[in-house]
Image (cartoon, rainbow, N blue to C red; front, side, top):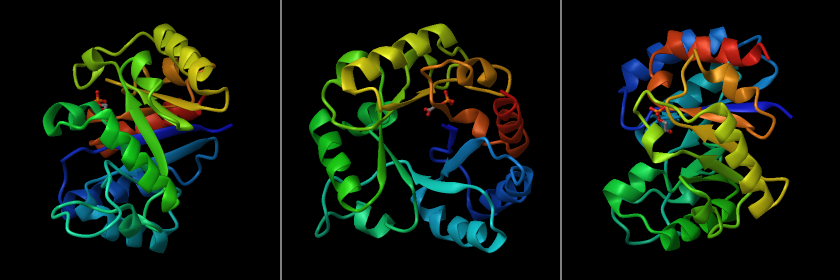
Length: 222
Ligand code: PGA
């Protein structure tokens, strides 16, 4: 199975910066066939990027960084799964920054997963330890240890592999497990080489298009 590389832009980039990024990365990944590549921009950039990716036939899907736990209605500020249908493939749910800054609970995350599935989106549930995994019924997990996020100090590839194994033993062998936390062009190979790690999520290092391309090129060399 192809390994997956997801770029998580978090709250970065405006339209101009997003298009400049795509102008470099889009053509650069044209010949990459052994990886699945997705980018998670802010909601406000999804439509523009979607149009550009379709027009140029770039081999890249879009992801969302969050979704509402509510279906639709009077929930000011929330973005519903229904409104994302057809626009994105994956949706990150329960990222540790959502839990830390916005008080997201396991209960809300369970609701978000339900909404995503109802509207044909693939939920990727973010966890930082094995205990959290037990609360969710999902086929896609992003394992991100807290110390590694944005710190420049990743987990060891061997430990990420052990965690991925344990997650699969807990949730089922068909569970897709990604690793995230300070992945860059230097260390990406060691993560994608791990047998139990099905891909990586890249935050900070995905912002620079040249660095993101290097990550893709290095990961595709396995
Ligand atoms: P980082 O972020 O690559 O900047 O550590 C990863 C993430 O939070 O998804």
